[in-house]
Length: 545
Image 1 (cartoon, rainbow, N blue to C red):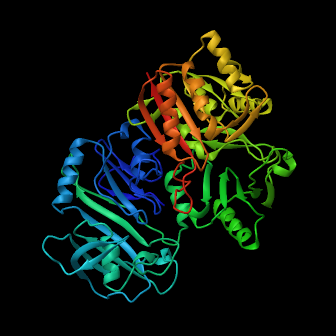
Image 2 (image 1 turned 90 degrees about the horizontal axis):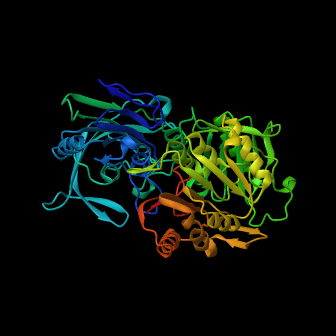
């Protein structure tokens, strides 16, 4: 997705790629296809509204004024102030906002402009158009032959049309295009021919600016030939400061069981089986698009205990494998990765947004971390959370059962010009050290719990996340200062989020602590959540009195 154009107004720099414009009153974005406008339920993936609202403190009061379907890309306007909310709501109600959409169809298209009118009625997952009747929702759209999209069309023989809705009903353009005999390419729900995406794009919007009453217009071009998976990531990941994201997430990206991570100059493919010829070809296409130096493949295994690094490590597939450890940039920080150290490469991309929260000190709207906190990072692995917190001035204690990973963590500190000597790195069992600190009365302002789903230590025996998380939280909460924050995370895929949160709430009650703020998020949007690829990661930030 390329940044759009705004008429008569300036566009600030250094914003997330999807942002077209921001001023005191407005935030205008180019929503990618495949991302909801807002989350469909409290524990589902974030929509672009939630992702933006909780990203920056100044965006905490964002309000949704209009919506785009998940499958539709294009210009979306959000209000930052009550003044903007009132003004834009009134303009939408009065139908003075002018919206222009582009669509593609492979069916015979009208050669002249016409207006479609009718009542729109829900019928299951679809909406149907009926003759206009009093008391029903009227849908009215002007359709016309569109501009020549040039190379932005995925195949010859397609027609481009413009659609200018005069009302704002759900699925209005999609349903009326189908009713008129030219369903949108990719819109199989309404009879369209299957394609990589629904080829409908909100190209432009115009209204009166809520502060100046001057005309304001915003436009975003579209390339219907672009891979929608890549377009979604390009809209959300600022690739100038981050080179770490998931490029393909299984069935959510129409590739069941196959996962590809973008790790700087390399791609890491993961599947339960070796790659067949078809996937090898698609991986080569991913690598070419990413201008990657090489690719590697890892066999996903349920049980990796006892495997040697040589057998568990990703194996080179194409290009030049990295000659030893390599660094990857994330949120402006540097982290060391390796394809030669076993099953894990040194960082978990699905925690990228949570590391950003530690780096900025901003968790969510109205929820900031204590300044310069004392941080305990349990199950620290290579200390990614600790590095992000320390870069924001925190004093960190990293605790892990592996000396090798703690040394790796020290190197990550040094990569970011943070002196490891100013921070603690402790080898040992979490439960054992929590007992030691209880005897000493030591407390922390922020405790990070991100245990593996299964682990074993000599001191505490077997730890299984679903069975033992309550015990871990109960041992941790007395070590948390009043007003402190507990971060809890699990990737136990079969554990419902409601049950995970209930365990934490029970631990807080039993400890005599009251939760005064909470913010729950699953995996970030580059790990899309789909019926065929449900959410697996559950993370929550809790501030306790």
